[in-house]
Length: 113
Ligand code: 5GP
Ligand code: ZN
Image (cartoon, rainbow, N blue to C red; front, side):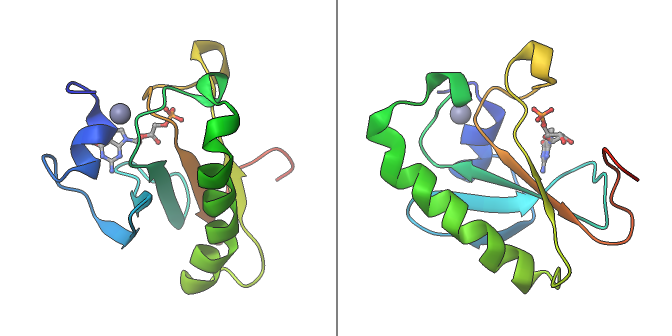
């Protein structure tokens, strides 16, 4: 998608602090971190949100899920981490390119602290 912010980060048109990339995904630091560690994982493929996922994306989604604990460990989050996927305006989604928030550290805001 030509005017998608995260597609532009994915193809290098807009700079980001990238911490991991492979042929399927890119992981970069959130520009406005809500925790000590706050990363965003995006697929290189443009998918609007979870609402647009289908069975053809199964391998991609599996790849993303399996990567999360490895990235968390690389970030020093041995004690745990939080993942968030906001979906749709009602779910607080602001950027309509599927992304998983990976958050952790001592400043973790949340549901029960
Ligand atoms: P959402 O609310 O859509 O789940 O989350 C979008 C996230 O993208 C927000 O946490 C916001 O801080 C982050 N964000 C928005 N624009 C940029 C940007 O240009 N660069 C980076 N690295 N993060 C961004
Ligand atoms: Zn996109």
